[in-house]
Length: 254
Image (tube, rainbow, N blue to C red; front, side, top):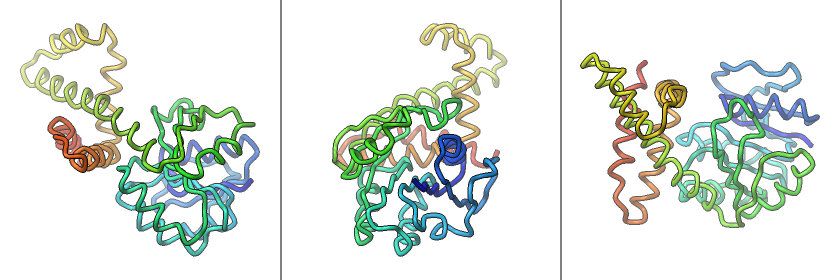
């Protein structure tokens, strides 16, 4: 099978390199490639060239670009290809992308990455929903991925991902604010002790939350914006999630 990866950032580059090792033919494109790719990955000249003749497409770019990219590649998609929308978007956005791609007669999958990609790479827990989810799972069963079929409803996997994000990104925002306050008052060790009282003496976890918020601020900010969109679309308050968005926005210029 030929696989195309649209967006070769942290997730996309890991997926591309791992799929090459599994014996797939892999093509991809990214306008600002910063990751190291296996020499066998075919780096195309643009998104349409990357997806041409691909049996499976993984879209792993920014949520803000996902609908635009779907329109861009629509004429180049192979009929009956499996299109996996991996961006952390709201269920409404996933459904919009599915609608955009409907003329190509592809099998659409709402694919959610449910944990940090490193160090497991493509073996990271994945949750699949949408009309093409069952077919994707059948195709990839021989490769022993950590891929779970949820149902055939587009947006179901996205909803679970975003509900999880309320907890993880919310906790990260609280830790960032606490540690910044501790540093300001010269009491970082004291603040770590207070956090330890809740999560146990796990400095590695604290550092992972702090460093991850800074390193992946843009992507995580878009993720929490999708959370706000989903919650407010259901008439729910998103007070803490909005706070997480504001907290992450501080790190965009770092």
